[in-house]
Length: 114
Length: 112
Image (cartoon, rainbow over all chains, first blue to last red; front, side):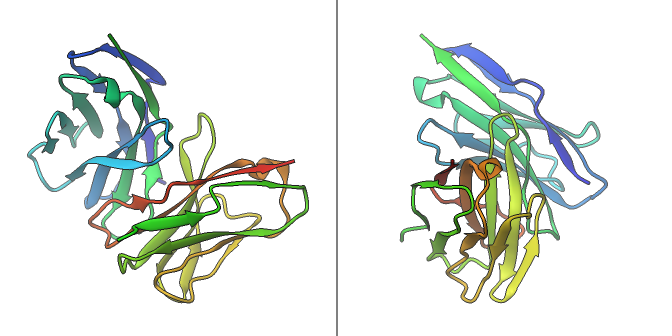
């Protein structure tokens, strides 16, 4: 069974600084996709970034980028120039190319301080 | 384009009552899922569907039923509510396996 592990329950970053959230996963599949979702206090789940396992290039979306290490089964999220609006729960998620379900980690709560 | 619409947003039930959480999407997505979110446990899959007429169980299906008679709708039924079903419930839909899911705004359910 696939598992997703987020070992940092809480993180804190100062405004304008950079923070990295960790995620590891366990799978025997070769075709899969990885995601980071943001959940602000409004409760809405927002897709932040997506990475295809077959792509070596790390995905980037504005201030958000990932460090995808396929051999190590690691998928960390880097947030640059952190803003107060980045404060939220962040979930790492995994999906195989053939299955329809997403498997989530337990989340990391990110605080952004002035 | 409303995306994924869940109703109600909040609900309080008494133990033993039944109810249906509604979910509708207007994006013509084939894949739909129901998750529950509990503190410290992330989101766990209850049931999912890969198209109209096709449903399957997820990680925590006990006490819940689903059906998918149309592409747009995917209701979740609680058969006999229990306090352990107190949670936040999310419905989500996806165009294909290549993409992430789009989530509804969630339903906070309390069973007393």
